Image 1: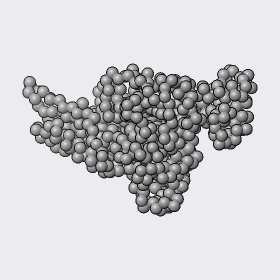
Image 2: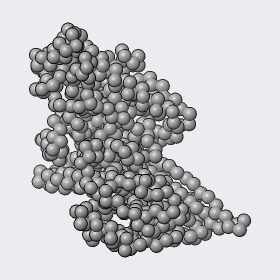
Image 3: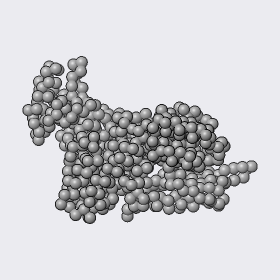
Image 4: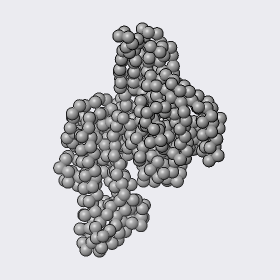
Length: 557
């Protein structure tokens, strides 16, 4: 059995998946002040009366790190940067505690200037005086030679709780994005670590013994233990769960808009022939352009519990949420209350809902029904407009999916798939307003949790070889080896795959149908004096994201 648990802004949904069906499902309110208790309550309710020794794993998707960034509640992490000639690293400042030290490598990783140890120690001293506990270190071209980052880390590691080196965070080239990614990793580390320790402690106290995985932004999973030093990978795991939940039942012959309508937000994603669209360069979150590989998603502050009010004579909806709908004990009117007034929902207090919507009706000189209809239509219209904007944005650039680069492709949606609490109520109106067939996915109320539970472990490895220098490295794996002049691309590919399999074992194991996919495959001859002096080889491989075998019958259960 497998557990899938998705912590949303309003509710946490959990499913217990047996071999070919959803055996059990629960929905509990999300306690943002105590998320680990939310996780524990979900797991406890789900495992009541169950022989937990039969549970092979639990997969969590969490908004914890995303919310910490959005609410500006991240740690005041420090950064030490060494760049050398070229762009001024001051342009990429991420923190008040941002120190630039001397030291430089060239584009092949050869040292052209040593690290200034006195500058490093002086920076560390200033950060200690300010109470900084977590530090990121990034040197330019560290993915070609990580020694400068290691040298700085060795000088300061004893003075801080955690130090993160850029080459471990991402093996991809892009100095500014590596700075941002390393900074985010360091700044969300304490939030993630506290969550990690609390969940592990609580599970131990409950006697629950099974591997815990976290869903990553790319729709794959990683072991909870492996995530402790890679917390930035969990950013956007919530929207990724939505995509994987829709994927389980999506037809393979259409472009599809996926809408996960929750209480606080609606997450939008696109599937092309049953494959999610990817953000290949890395996700942008807030002001930060990162190297975090992610599914292409868009979250808007529009959901069933969005705050409805009248401003300057016009009805405004969201992005703020002030609590549940009045039909469920809240104090402010919401789109969900409008559904009650229109007779589309019936499992709450309709009188309370009517009271809330009547305030809107009076201020806009409409009848109760007219006001409710406008709120509902406006909510659907704004969701559709945001989906259209997202499609226009994707169509204006080369399109990448998690499997392929599709040149000159133009998305033409033939289906809208809706999930989340009010999905079945929204579907008819979304279809009427968009003109596109709209369906609620099977198990729409817990589809995100199902998607998390069915997702496979994934990871990637970047391998770089310079045969003229006689070295090869996999920067994220802390791996290096000597290579001879006759080391060729096929040798590099074999070594990259070997490292990938070892990494996959640490991240949750290779599954039977796991496929190794080549993301980058480059080899250049280096010429000196009209003769080849060696090869510059770059290989990037990954375990392809996807769903577990047998998911079709489970998704339809």
